Amino acid sequence: MKKFKAVCFDMDGTLITNTNSVEYVCQLNGKGKEVKEVELKEERNEISWIEADYIKAKFFTGLETKRIDEEFQEHIKVISNIEKTLEELRKNDIQSILVTAGPIQVGKVLGKMYKFDEIFGSLYEVNNVFFTGKILGHLGDSGKVESLNKFCSENNIELEEVVAIGDSASDIKVFEKSGKSIAINYSDKLIGKADVYIRTNDLFDVVEHIIG
Image 1: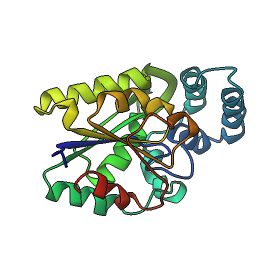
Image 2 (image 1 turned 90 degrees about the vertical axis):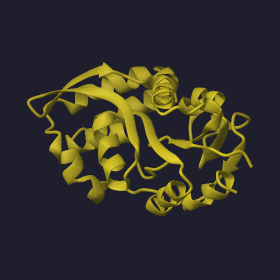
Image 3 (image 1 turned 180 degrees about the horizontal axis):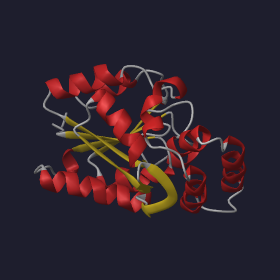
Image 4 (image 1 turned 30 degrees about the vertical axis):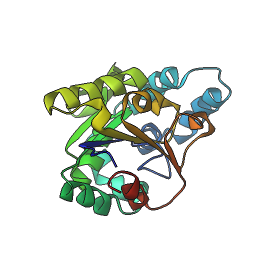
């Protein structure tokens, strides 16, 4: 099996299993009903997922950023064995990065919790520790590729030496650029786009497809 040097993990639906990062922040700010209405429009293809994120960002307005960290474990469920998986990758000199189109503020909480080597996410504006309701830089699917390219360039890693792990259409471009792609608990939009398909509650199941 090819020797890989890095694994690029998506966050929402891949590591976070019971909600998504944008919805989580909206719910913290008492906007659960409003965010569901926007998501229904998304599902009906009335708006794109990126357009939806800009609408949902307004529901962040006035929320203090520290609540994301303080209430994370109360509201968020993650796939089992993230820590064990990353430890096994480290033993094999494989770096782990988190690349999400969700808010970097949520990504950093999860990233620090499990000691990811680097974290990339969309930049939601904060003024004096409160969200303003604006997005300064949304990664989207192209931004996820740009983030991966940046990491690889800075760490002398070729894209062919990266394994990408994700669950949705926003991961397709990263899959296309990476040496190997693993679709985990995937949406139908990923069928035919990945090298490996897994449905599991245990992240450690990906290890055999990375290390062998």
